Every structure is written in C-alpha cells, then in structure tokens.
Image 1 (cartoon, rainbow, N blue to C red):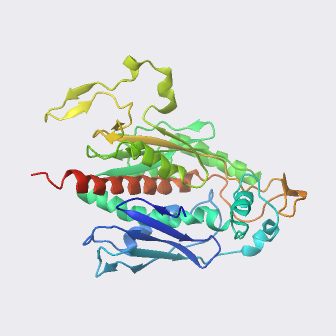
Image 2: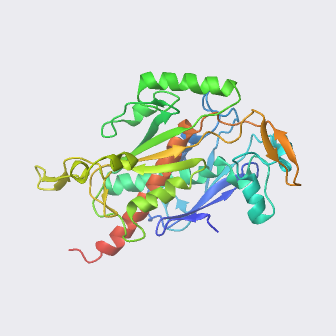
Image 3: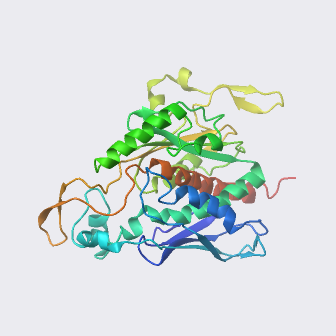
Length: 364
C-alpha cells in the first residue's frame, strides 16, 4: 500500500501525527552491526520539532525505543522495530479541519481516495511520518560508513531567493550544524533566519532547496534499466512531504550547455583509477555510480498550512474561509535536511547490498 520502501534493505513506516506514536520496521539489515538507540537519537534530534525559533513550537523529545532486532548492542539480522511515542499533541487545534480542507494539503485527496481520514494534525500525511525514515536512515548511514566509508551531508542551499555559496566537495557536518538555518554559508544563513522569522510573524510560509552530497562513493551501484541509481534517489527524496522537484549533477542547468561543454572527460589518477575531470553527471552515469561524489538537490514548497485566510471548501460541499490553527514550520527546509540525508542513505544502502549480492558473489 505504499508504506514500504527498498528491496534488500527494506523499511515500512507506520503511525499518525496525533496517534499513539510513529515508527519504522527495518528488514534486511545485516546481522552483527553495532547500533544503539543513542546513535539513532542523534539523527532524530536534528529532525525533531521545537529545536529552534524558526521551527514549529510543538515540543516533542522524539525519544526512540528499539523494540526488536537488536540484542546486546548488535543487530540480529531479524526485523528491527523502532518506536517514537507522541507526547505533545493538541488535537483541538484541528477541530475545524475535521470538515474543512486545508488548501494544498492532503485533506481533500485522502477523502477522495479512502473516504475517511485522520484529520488531527494531518494524520498519516504529516511530516511526522518521516521519523521512521530518519531512524532507519541512521542505521543505513552506519552501514555505508562501515562498509564503504560513504559520507552523506545535506544542507539548506536556498530559501526563497536567498542562495548560499557551498562547495559540496568540502562542506562539513560541523558547518551545517553551526546555525539553525542549516546553511553552511554563515552570512547567507543569517539572512535566511531573518526571512523565516519575518514570514512566520506574518502567518505565511517559505520554500527552498536542500542540496545533498554523498562522498567516497563506491563504483557500480545502480540497477539498470528501471532501477537506475538516480531514478531510485529521485523516488526516495520525492516521497518526502512537501518535495516538488529533483535535480542531480548539472540538473536543469545542464540543458543550457552543449554536449562538449557538459561531458565529463575521463583521466587516470595517481593510483591508476578512472576518474572524471568534472562532475556534471553528479556521480552517476548510465544509472550506475562512477565513484565521484553524488550531488543532488530537492525543492520543497512553502508549508501548506498557514495562518492567513484562504478560500476553501468543506467535505459537505460548501465554500468557506480558513485561517489554519496548530503549530507548523514557517519553512520546512532546516528540518528537511536530515530527512533528505536519510532517504539518500536508504537508497544507497539498499543498492550497496544489491551490488554485493549480485556482482561480488563470484568475485575472487
């Protein structure tokens, strides 16, 4: 029913925004991997609400519990279940949305599809669902780092028309986490924070772009034809709430170049390895990783739920005006960074396991 993602490293998320809790079941994780709730919590803390003055004021610790699949600090190879219980719910804020559809939200489409929906906080369509993805992504990150030394770093590249100058080849996690905007360009980050605060006070919202880089990539990941690596990355990040666009490498800007300008010429490095002079391909050619850094971008729309009055309709079929209540991010970008990282990690981990199984079984 669309709640499961991945092939060999497979996750199924569950739960609603104002239900008992949310979480994930991870199947296919290799056994004997050392993992702890504390390691997973580090990533969840980057995603949780109420972490700064520019995020939703909902206060959730998002403390994770490992229910199964880990024994004495190591994975068993059996399904890993991780749960985060909802604590700070204020469902009364959503009473009006029981009958009234929020513009550009999932209310009307959920009713059209299922004929029933959890209207408290958006239910399953809430970004709170991504807790399970981020928890699973923490485990995927550790596998990638341990097996192939892959490093995944996401950051806010742009908010509205404010764009940071960031080098994906050298950016560090410390630079990303040095400010609440999660933009490594400190000067631009200050202006981003000011813009978000200003729009929040007005009851409106902003969108932008998260860029993500995966460095130290092994060659050979990707399964042509339909499971090309960039295709699976696109599906992964575009399944995130509020995502509206995907680019990899040169992206749409590459359409302005000629073939001779766009092609990544090859050379042999000091070890004799085949490398590319440029990386307009974004680390993937023919749907397969070529060993260069994977660089991708995800566009996120402005938060749909805003306090400004807007025209809408009710489930009973009457027109009305809605100024939404509740606690919402005026800009999802800073909290979306660990979500993008998680989806990239889940895709790469899954493809790493698939590559190991198919292509290295008979290798000497």
